[in-house]
Image (cartoon, rainbow, N blue to C red; front, side):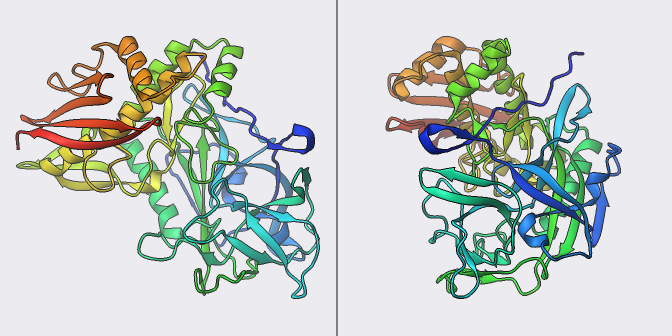
Length: 457
């Protein structure tokens, strides 16, 4: 079987006069308080037993610092990928080592101390405002080694910052300080990685090799900048990291913190060109995206086991933007990354139908809407020019796929693309009961709204 190599497309900062600046971070390995390994995966590497912190945090910390400096690359969100390490082969796929919970990308403008002895840092993010404020923190710079970047906006240093501030506070948040992972959440990711392997769940996912846990009170010295009423300080900041494997830095959609990650939604031209340079058949690539992402989006449907009358035991998602959390290898095979959002749940037939249709709260990013969205943005790769509007996008998709989505889940299911009124009609059935959904697209972008138009329950 042909080995599929780890796939990386360069995603750089832009320096002065438009020159690309490769993004690198300096990390150190420190000895954690606790290591929990995946008993089903032994890759024979010692780096799965360390905790990773940025260079600024280890200055003057002689005790517990095991190795460094280590070169890393940002991987969106709160993750980094280690640069210079050998890739790991599992099955026919090659992966790189990825650490989730190792810090959120931030840059320090200039190198001047303020009167309070701290330097101003701002989280590097495409969005101007997240959760009601702009994530400005103060942090003491004590001679951070590493790289300096010079852009048109000035000179700055880059770090993967772990703070003791909870910007996810409130009822909507998971209470994870910026850059750090909650120990319980990390343990759930490892638990899902093990259970899905044992249950032979038929989706590709990014396996967790281990979780590491530490009390970082001595390593986190940050404070809010005029935002004390909008962020909550964690009094006992225990952090965890997931050491996992990922097949590429390419996603289906862009996550909230996209630095280091490219998506077929926003970077289709660059991805198309890279595939052409590698002589990858674009039509086969898109077919693989559609086929393998379907297994992910309809995970609850495909993993269901009847537990009692009209009830099932099934793997389900919670609080996950599935397209943004799905990575692609260089053949177009989709791999799910965010394993902490997956768990086995007892679910009724009605709820399973609604989740599959994607028309209940918290399911707009899975099921039929997410599958259709992925179908349309992946279809863009087949053309050197993007479709000018939604109607043209739907027209191209209908011409390319025709009736190929009759029976896409079961013999009774179907998806019908209607370019003229910018809608897609879809129907799914589970054990004799069904639901029909209309997805209507609005505006010039792929914004959609789904509603039930018929049911048999």
